[in-house]
Length: 413
Image 1 (cartoon, rainbow, N blue to C red):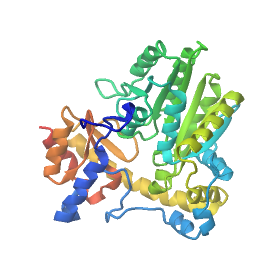
Image 2 (image 1 turned 90 degrees about the horizontal axis):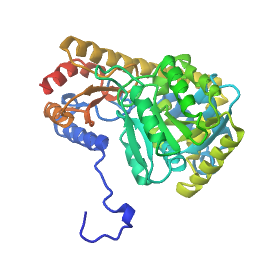
Image 3 (image 1 turned 90 degrees about the vertical axis):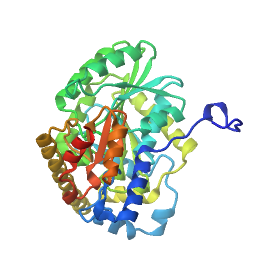
């Protein structure tokens, strides 16, 4: 921190090096110096094909480029185009809307904007949201930026098996000192582990939370970050648990961070929605009102072109089928890459966190920074986390997957 500061007291000392984009820069520098054939860039959560070219969905790209300028460049409504909001809800649930609930949505700049709204509007200033101990780093940044904190629950036990024990303990602990509690679940295809909660996991979670909610002074908000949902299995496998929302009392609100970044590979268009699900009409309306207000107070309007695209896709079954089919091809590509890594990890005795699907595989490590540095010496670029190293298998061509597990094992010795 500099000796003299013009910043307000709450802003002094802010600043960090982004863990992902700093590694991406090092990887790109290595490519420029050595050529891409000699570099493995496993840093960024974006799909690249087996020729290491950035992937977009051709059906999305072609349709978007044909849209008229007024749909691309005009303002969108502050809360989002009405038909976009309807489409975002339909695309999120895909036939698995919970019965006897009220559902509202507001447009946000990707899932990040949705996380921002939930942290700001449902966590009291100075209090904490509860997030998994393996987490997307910006959760902490977003909380800090809005004068909130985070606490973590352990996703896995000492044998790296999924557990709800820590979630239950931390929930009870925080509810003793605060009446509002936001709990984050990043599933299906969790970033950075690739874990997906099962129907049994969800049933146990909701049974526990309903007991906590018997104290009507407590307000529990679930934030489901579903960024990778469409790379995690069938519609039933990924959305079947959503039917359980119909059993929740009015003092448990489910919020969902919907994003077009991964499902439509429109990362830079920054388009998504925050969806609220409640058994109370009043709670659902309040959700819409406060979050639409926050839209105006933070970023005003969203990206109209992306919103209009989703709205049009929802009305065009043929176009949606093309997009789904193309996305499925890339889902298979990522699964094939993951299969190589997981098979070879087992062969060399490399422990990984339980991977089910998604863009990432994570290897636990006692000194992640040292492991990442050793791999970088071999021109393999991964993201060091607090307790492990993350491989973005979505961006590594299939022919470069073989041998990564063995080299990682060597880097840890």
